[in-house]
Length: 114
Image (cartoon, rainbow, N blue to C red; front, side):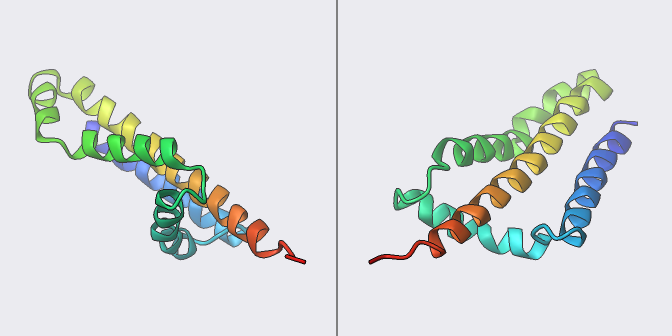
């Protein structure tokens, strides 16, 4: 059941992202390619995504952490539910932040310096 919840959340987020690309939004490949540029612009201080990137890194570390296996061994579904929520939040955060970053890049590229 818990694996089904995790898969459902992941597939729902993926479907939304794919549909966004089909409706004129950025595609998945465009978003993935933007992540290294977003990290570079943030470390240079050009883009204001520092806290959001830190939160996404913390969420990734939480999901991948072997310490998180302990609650899953004893709480089963409830132990996996926190991972499902975190994965869903992380996927949504990555999608939202990459879209925001791509818009920031477009605005920055449109600025005319006189």
